[in-house]
Length: 156
Length: 237
Image (tube, rainbow over all chains, first blue to last red; front, side, top):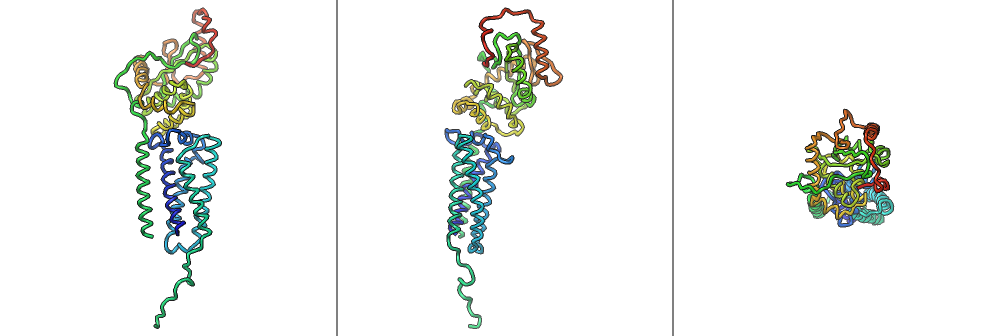
């Protein structure tokens, strides 16, 4: 349960980072707040800032939103004992993590610029990925029938 | 469990406020660079030029960076004109601003080009503004995009920011616009050849300019060649 809560919180943080970058890519808010280095402008205006016709940050918004929704749904009492949710979270986090590795490679070796917001997002998705991996190893909550106390005997 | 959802909701609200604050303080087109200045002073600047100073023909173009026809002319016709007429020393091309009132960001774009020009990158910046002309169709604030263009061509971003924030060249641009008004320029791009307006029924091509320049040179009295201009290679000023 703790892992799912942590993933929900981290996904929420990542969602707002991606949302800010996406809104900026759409032209809202003027110059991006990125410190004096200007790396965010370099990255955001590079040709790699668009993937399949959409701003890269848009995929971040969708990915983090999906992680948040799945984590919150998996926190329902009825879903707590179902380990399949851990697998779903781990699969989503792995996709995001692999995409982040690709984007970090592009930043470092093709654009030669570092965007602090992108680094923030990379840290968040890495933490989500590690947490989701650890959740696969943790024992499942015992909510099966055998673990529950026997129902009271109506004849008593 | 309920406590966790409360914490999550509070965090969402805090983050939403933070993002809104970032977007609101992100700036936008600085008013000093985006609007007309209250006063106009002639700083003696008469436009950036391409070509040799002693070229027999001078063409002045009044342009608007947001104008799609200007962008088409700059990206489609200008490369051939440069190759055939400017680099061969036959034409000197002068660029003057005429930001039209119907365009929201043309004055701002002209100012961005001037700020890049202060660092020797006017033509590189103009290329960026015309080549990536999608900004003119979106209607969105292009300030961060222009800053990216400036950085892409090697302009120091801090000096660029200071120039844009202060509206350093707003008077220069307005002076050029008023000059265009006095010359009764009623659209962009408008061309003058050796001070006389060229009139076209359609957007002229490089062949039109070649024919006109050939004709002007053929009917001009021969000029004594100055040693200085003869040695000078095609230059950007």
